[in-house]
Image 1 (tube, rainbow, N blue to C red):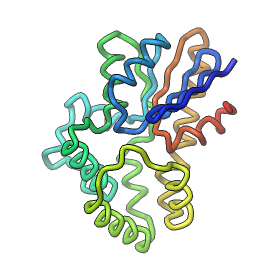
Image 2: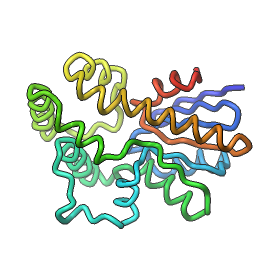
Image 3: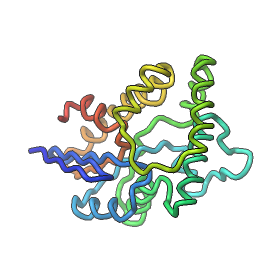
Image 4: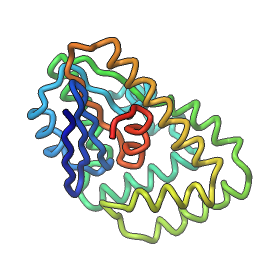
Length: 212
């Protein structure tokens, strides 16, 4: 039987032994810990790839020559900067769940496509879409940090204005993550699995998994 709950920060959907949690990357750690404590998983799935996982645990130093200077990297860095200015821990949703799993000896599953592969695909987008993103970044630098956004509106705008970027950052990743979740569930039918993914991905991934 499925159950669903929505709050300002989290969207959850549970069916059988799988719980999918839609977050923002500004979701407070306390909310992540609360839902983990209530569900008591044995497996934690994250919207992370091996490269970003290594960044989070300090195996890759992003202050040196390995820093991500791609347009996506620049947007991420600007968001981190704004979060810091507002005393918010950027990516607290993924980091909190990750360290909880590591500290409690829970199996950790990295669900996302590797950021290096994504960045390589992004180098091939049309010039007009790159220019669009650069202009959006300039506008974003002048704006205040929004803890909540209208995901549906963002998705529709991307589909309309930057379809190639949408395919790389949203569509292809949704399919990749959904397949990883399917694989994890099929291999661990007797385990309780909790998955943390961005709310911009959550609805479509549930559709791909036939979870409504």
